[in-house]
Amino acid sequence: MITLDQTEIKIISFLQEDARFPFVKMAKSLGVTEGTIRRKFNRLIKHGIIKTTAICDPYALGFDAPAFVGVRAVQNKAKSLAKKIAQMPEVQFVALTTGDYEIMTHVVAESNKLLFEILIKISDLDGVMGTNTFIMLDIYKQNWNLGNILNQDKIKEKEKK
Image (tube, rainbow, N blue to C red):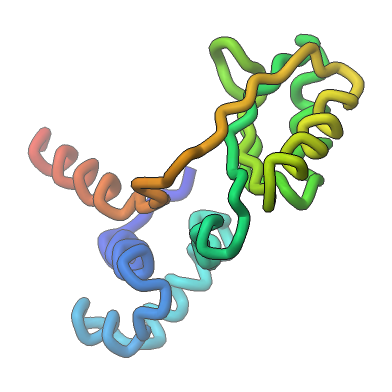
């Protein structure tokens, strides 16, 4: 686990507010140099703490069949299955999970017909015992913002001291 300082936590918060937030503005706001921001940003990238990407609304792009798919797997094959499923271009998210499904995925398809084809591909993989599909009818929140949580944890740490 990497320990973050307050500047790094703020950089994450700024970027989660606006991924194009200028380093110069961050530096001015935090009272540090732009070089410090750039160095800390590169450290966050290098250690896999942040990745830069755009979050898209699948409906706005014509993908009318986004779905979560729970996959039941033969116990000793869950990890290798997750890796195979992660290679599928239509699959946006794959995680090993507890509960009714060993693997949970997020799939984006242009239509129900194409979603069905993706589900067949997943079901045909060796070790899949079954799937359950949760079609998304509408999206009300799509946010991967951990900046506020990081700040809350730091505040709790200070309160304990």
